[in-house]
Image (cartoon, rainbow, N blue to C red; front, side, top):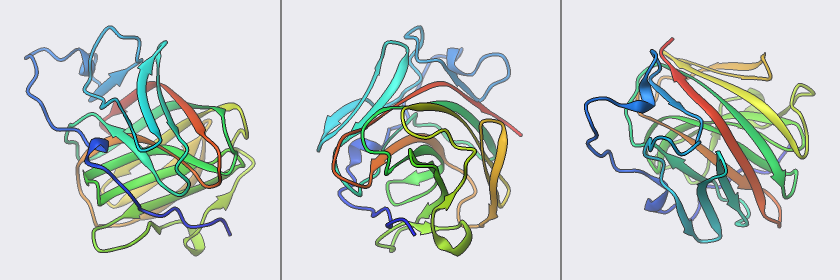
Length: 216
């Protein structure tokens, strides 16, 4: 069993405020709810910050998250509100411990309430839920823990993540193949996001690219 990913020292910087934008939104053209290749041609609202040993920045065509704070999950959001979504994104671990966790948030209400879909550099995955009043993540995957899969590319490698939050079904696929589907009724809508954690000393660095959010 892998250690629990604790919910500690989460700052308001990790959340975005919804800001009014222009009538034409370059981030949701061509039928997408949200599309961002992080190339710099558009500003979709991702929060960039440097705080508490974590850095979130968009540079060189990717969104990069790094953290050296063991057991803490750091994330960024776009400050939008969705209901049912399918999210795909390329995630590449570039350095740091393989005992890490990185992935996608959906139905984000605030820093205490959201679903999270994680894989790790040593080949594990989990679907979890943060909920106000709970001191740590609640895993929804079997036996309430991380599960190993050889479908996940380990170490310094790229994985294509696909997350589905439709009705009460929450699904995670990697590199075109399904990993898990669970059910939960806690949250019915909210923001999407990207997050990274390290579960042992060292700085985990993950690059995200080609994010696409679609209605099912």
